[in-house]
Picture 1: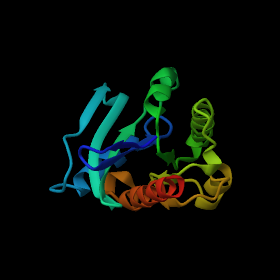
Picture 2 (picture 1 turned 90 degrees about the vertical axis):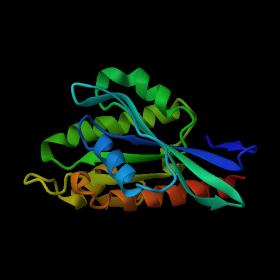
Picture 3 (picture 1 turned 90 degrees about the horizontal axis):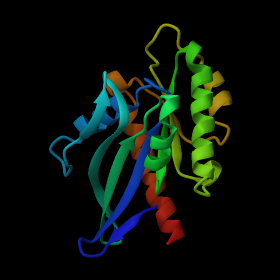
Picture 4 (picture 1 turned 180 degrees about the vertical axis):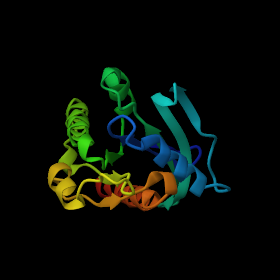
Length: 194
């Protein structure tokens, strides 16, 4: 849930990248961080073990203004591993928008489905209906040889028909487009609510 800091004239939004383990969440966040180099941002905080993010990556990022207030986005990733369910629940508290990063490998479709179902459960526990909540999908790793058909991935993962993007996070293809769309949707949702 957005937080307004009247002293600093800021509206703070929380964006969380969700998806199965090693789908490209952290790489997507790193690409956004690189893309905003030199702009108003803070340091990227990483907590990882054995090259896998266990808790979160966090980037506060300023993007424009709304009604004279600066918008500040706090961007996190959650661990994709099933055993970190409690961490995911904690990080998703107060979320304003979600980027779901799906792994395009054919053998990862079940992991994508489990992760998406887990997201729906996590949000339902916060009384949030994913169908009426700002979110976008990234079909990541589109450059791999065994990439699933995008049309099939849409049928499987995008029942709500939200904006979706084919991405290659390692090359920053499509990643910032997905983030920019979500940022617009989050701001619109805020404006419609307040």
